[in-house]
Image (cartoon, helix red, strand yellow):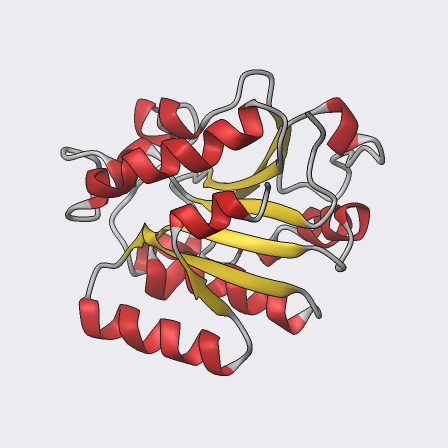
Length: 205
């Protein structure tokens, strides 16, 4: 079984504080998409597709806490990814200009975790460097939370950089349905496709 040369899976912020009841910034109903997240991530664990994951890694000084309550603080249980979206032996790229981004990251690893301290994963300069390694010729299949915030920023950033993007409708979750729907409509107008988990897995066949 070989890793797809046509598709990259991109998992957005599937962390305890967002995904599970009792989390510091729990997204209501987020646990309902965990079965589909697990199916998507299992494909990476089997070596069928490379998986990029973003995670919040906050400190109390982060500007985001002027708008949102503290969440996903570095070193806390809430900052961890849920086990269903974790591939053993993943590689972490911190939000530090000197952080190494290996050229051989796709044959060597199955999952890379990009840390961020803001809504937009591209505020980590290493996201651009990773994209250069992965290439813009593949389609980026995006899922996770929250549709109108970090998912939107991720998909929009990829589209602006010339990548093809598909959003997995049954593996994302919104805080406010109307805002989430507007975000999806905007992304579709920019060229993103809306697909299902089944269709995403079918791209790897």
